[in-house]
Amino acid sequence: MTEMPEHTSKIRKGYALDRGYAPAARLNLQHQCFKELLGYNLHPKIPVDPNDENLSIADIGTGTGLSPSIWLTDLHKALPLARLDGYDSSEDQFPPKAWLPSNVSLRRLDALKLIPEELYAKYDIVHLRLFVYVIRDANPMPLLNNLKRMLKPGGYLQWVEHDIPSAFIDAPTPDAKRSANEAVIRSITTLGNHE
Image 1 (cartoon, helix red, strand yellow):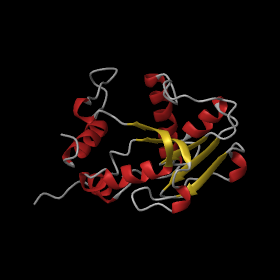
Image 2 (cartoon, rainbow, N blue to C red):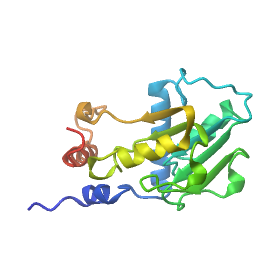
Image 3 (cartoon, rainbow, N blue to C red):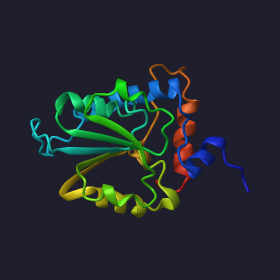
């Protein structure tokens, strides 16, 4: 049996990337790339009223609250009256509460396990990004069931993912190194969830 690379093994166990300054910077850049590519933070077909004080939005896998959920703080600019709650399986990268906008809160939550009843039917919108990397045993149902529980009736789920089967690595010049990025694509593909 071939031994799997360390990063592939980490993916199988849960979050595959490190937490710290450099990963937070990568996540900030990643957010800007997604926003540039998609053209929005919140899909334009999801109806929101920026003056609605009762609007509640959850971000699952929020990271630092600043990155990747720079998404939350970015969304705060468009929806300053909404309640914006970020959840992550680790509090390691949460900034001090004083650094966050007053309508943004961060909390520990493992979205792959049964969620507390207090979160049932609490949110108008639930957002998550890049969870294909942490879904266990190629079974998204535990996560999907939790996301559905969190949504109010008629609520919206916004889930953003890479299209792994069509992924390729492009470089600005032929001699630019691509091996690390290619290894990430191979690792994800070898998990068997994306072919």
